[in-house]
Image (cartoon, rainbow, N blue to C red; front, side):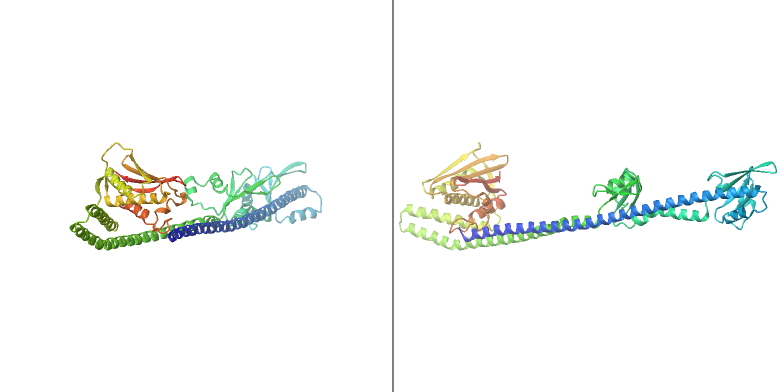
Length: 512
């Protein structure tokens, strides 16, 4: 095997190592990013769980506070009843010492109280919101505000045989009202202000059915998803569910709520970042490789063209000299059979020189009969090949004249190169068979041999410049054949089939 083949084998090994290295880099990048994303996502879930625990503890505080307020309300109701009883006794009592009842009434400095006659007119009042206004009209207006809040306390007594009925209306104390309003504000806002606003990820707080949204936060409502479907409970839940398992919290004895959350933008960006990064790097490398390959191919083409023209130029001088010597030999009466053969070889050299001169240029294709071109080319090779090697040709077409636009000399060169490679693959004997068929406007020429075959992993490599399995080969024949077929005849040449120790089939496809 030549040093050029070693270069291609080494190149193939380098490609494999580079591909494996690239895969390892990609795998390491994805694994590291995946681990990093999982850690951040775990931290976010831990924050949400801590946050949910805060909700639960705050809810317990709210519950205890509500119970305390109910107790205060009950105490005020009892106090109001005591006041009503004291007022009744003070009104109807005949005792001389009324100090005890008077003190009870005076001790009430917080509960607004309005006592009315049976007909609803104001009898007395105390602790109304505007303590500076002691008019009966003001008390009547306040009575309209508290009349429907709760049932009044009925006071019935007799004075001098006359039955008197009074009604005492009372409202919540000022302190109780202030505390209750404050507590309601806290109750209504503790999830939104304490929990939702402190969350670093989009969250949705639902009831036990998972269908009604109580609160939500950090949800970008400008997303096209919400612009299309509108912001409703169902769209919020649909948007945020499915990414993480919901967190269950117990707000009361029988009250279970759920917190759904979505990973932050940072986690999602990190999750997709390596793919975007690797895609950009891959596109950059592919672009660079394409530009480098194009430049290298262009440089190789210029080298091939220069070498071909120089070879044609160098052959021109000895060919001209040989033509002169042939004429001298003829004039000296040398046997014509000898001079005829020399003339044939000189014409062959002229053809070869002409071929090299056309490799570096773009030849003008001319219509040629493919039967004639193939027949002459194969006969030429058969006359210069061992008799132990048989040439066969099969025409699987009905037309006797199949015109194909081609550069005849260059196309014959392709046939000669394929035949020479087939001869080198044979063990001194065998068959070289050519089959011609037509499929639509495509002409297919299959040249097969019964040689040693080509490994499948080398089917494309054999057409590269410099690749050869011969000790003294240059590896240019098949490379030139590929260039001539693809660039000058707009066709294709490839290994159709090859079986070790059974033979190889190389197919040429050119447009008719």
